[in-house]
Length: 178
Image 1 (cartoon, rainbow, N blue to C red):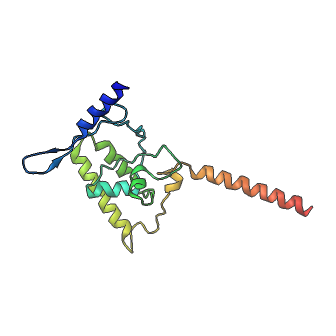
Image 2 (tube, rainbow, N blue to C red):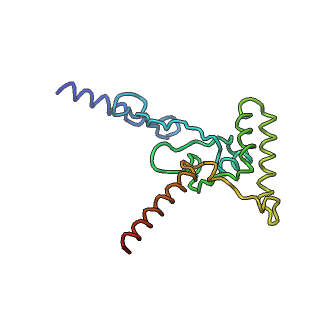
């Protein structure tokens, strides 16, 4: 009992405010409940790099606000990349025209800064060309989902699933009509 009382007094003395020469109060930091000065750390999410960055990560790299690396969200059900999830905007796959340049930009990121800057400029030009009203890519259809760009599933698997559902519905209709 006496030990608990002395520990409480020591704790209160440590928490007491001191007055410095200017009359301002300084407060001593309180110890954490576990006794260690650091709080328990939250387990960080593992870094799972996507092969092809999403459009948002490419635009961030072009603007100089990011490096162009696009990380998967491994915890939860989100299909957005980590940057899009934190920024609270949609994670759109990049256009298939941008894929080779984006891959080259990621390769040059740690090795060749001149090539990285050239890739950023090329991506900026391609995005400008895609955004034009009479774009040179107007007839060029983006095959983002077919390439599995920034998505977890492929369009081939989705097409097989649609075909199996369609066949099941047709069998059900035939069974009802007979």
